[in-house]
Image (cartoon, rainbow, N blue to C red; front, side, top):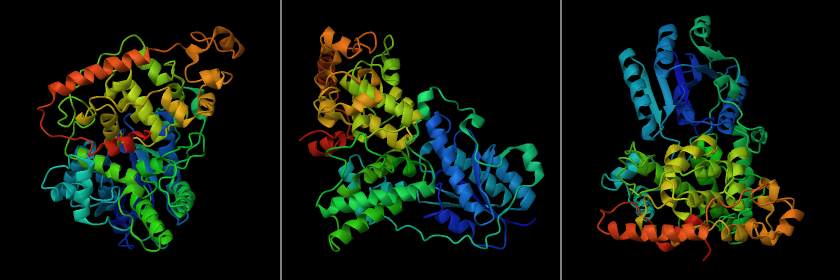
Length: 525
C-alpha cells in the first residue's frame, strides 16, 4: 500500500482559495487523487437541465486542463462515493480525504455516510469552510443557538463575529505526485478520460434554442470575468455610486454577473467579497464601507444558507417551520405550463422565461417579476413549482438561496408583505426597465414589429396594427392567460384575509424595513 490523499470536488470547482487542496497535498511523498464523482446528486445533478449540466462539465474540463499542466488530471467517474473511496483505500491505502463543506442539509446524509465509512477504514476526513463567508453553524451559535429571523439581525450577528476570513494563498502544484487509477477501476466504474458531454450522462437538449451559449463554466473564465466586473465596480465607486446595475439594469448587455461561478465554486466568494471591499477602500483612500450595501447580494446568500442549515424541509411548504401555509390553488388548465414556456401573453414575463430556457440566467429584477407573477402577483400558484423549475434550468440556482428567494418574493416567509402592496406589475415594470421594448423583441421575436406603445400590452393593439406587425394576438402570440388587474385585486384581498388570520402567529422570518423590501424587489422609490 502506497498511502495517498484524495481531494473530493463537489462544489468549490477551483484551485484558488481552496484550503482543501492545501490540506490534500501537504505530504508530497504520497499520491494525490483529485476526483469528481457523478453520483446523480452532487453539484445539483439530481434535477438538472442541459445548460446547468453543460456549465458544470465545462468547469470540470477547466480543472482537468489545469491539472494536466502539472502532469496530472482530474479523475471523473460515475459511482457512489463510499464505494469509490473504499476501493481507493484498498488499492492505495489512502490516508486522507479532503473536501469543501457543503453546508446545506440536503448533503448531510451523503457526507455523514462518507465520514462514517472513513472512520471504519481509518481514513482521516478534513472538511474545510470556503463556500460561504462565515460558517453557518458559527452564525447560529453567535445568535444564541437560533437562526437570525431577519436580515438586519443577521447583519448584527455577523458583525459580532467579525470580518470573514481572507482567501487562502494560491497553491504551487509543481512537484505534486498525481495518482492514476489501475485498470480494475475502468472495469468496475464508468471512468471518463475527459470531461463528458451532457448526453453521456443522460441529459439531452429539450429545444434547439438552448444551444445559445452566453455563459461558460470554469475557474479561468470566472477569474477573467471577475477582473472585468471589478473594472466596472471601480468606475462606479469613482463616481460615488454603488451596485452599477441596480437602479437601471442592462437587460441586454453582456454577462457580468458572477453568480453561476459562485454557485459552482469556480470563483471563491471570499475572493470576490474581499476584492470588492479592497477596491472600495482603494478608491476612497482606506475608508471602510459604512455598511454591507456594496456586497449586499453576497450577504443575502449567506443569510439564506444560515436559515436553511438546520431545516431539511426548507425547500418545501410541508413541515417547513419558517414557511407560511398560504392556500395556493392547484394549477388550472395550462397556466403553469404556459408560465414555464414563456407563453403567458404578458411579453415581459414571457421574454424572461424564454431567456431562462435558452441561456439559464435571469437578472435579479426579472426573477422577481416572474416569481411574483407565478405566486401572489397573478397566478396564485405555489412557489414550489417555481423553485423546481429554477433548480432545473437556472445556472446559479442552489437549494438554499433559490428556495429563500422564492419564499421571500411569494410572501411565504415574510408576513409583513401579506398586503401584497409591493408587487411587480408585469406591464409597468417592463415599461420602466426596458422602455424601448428591445429586451422583449430579442426573446419574443413574434412581437419584433409591434409598435412600442403596445409591446407590453399587445392585446390592446387594434387589429390593423396587429396585422401590420404580423402578430395576431391569440394566433402568432397568445392572449393573456388571465386578467392581471382582476387577479392582482383578488390576490390582495386574499392576502388581507390571511394577514388577519396570522396576526397572532409566532415570530418568524420577515423584512427588517420597507426599504429592505424595495431593495430586494428592485422597485422604484
